[in-house]
Length: 179
Image (cartoon, rainbow, N blue to C red; front, top):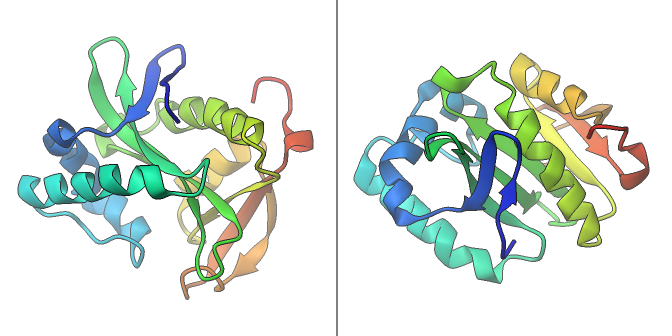
């Protein structure tokens, strides 16, 4: 995504190395990281977060479009409140996953849904035929967000990360008004 996406309250933009401290409040929070393992472990300090961001920034131009990782920044104060990504799911890298991570002190404000809606529309505009969201069965927040986006539950699988996950899907024809 070469340009930023703006919503009523958020800007979806490329990560910057200078976001390390703010990103640590997301990826260094146990309440966030526990849902990301085994794909990503808890980040424990700013220096490590800086290295993670640098790796994401360097990988971004080489990702299969429209894959990427972006920061969610609150427009009113330019504060990073989370991250969102589109990535190819393992093991076959055929299915695109939509994921979101929000700082725990920002939960319950609708930021994940607000950011995901235009990102889904943008991905479909890039030719993606369907997007998936995967969540552990007891990750009620992620499941509620997927459902709030109009994603359809399609079952459970351990195919992607070797752990049992709930799988949700959205296709361009599934998008209802407001999504």
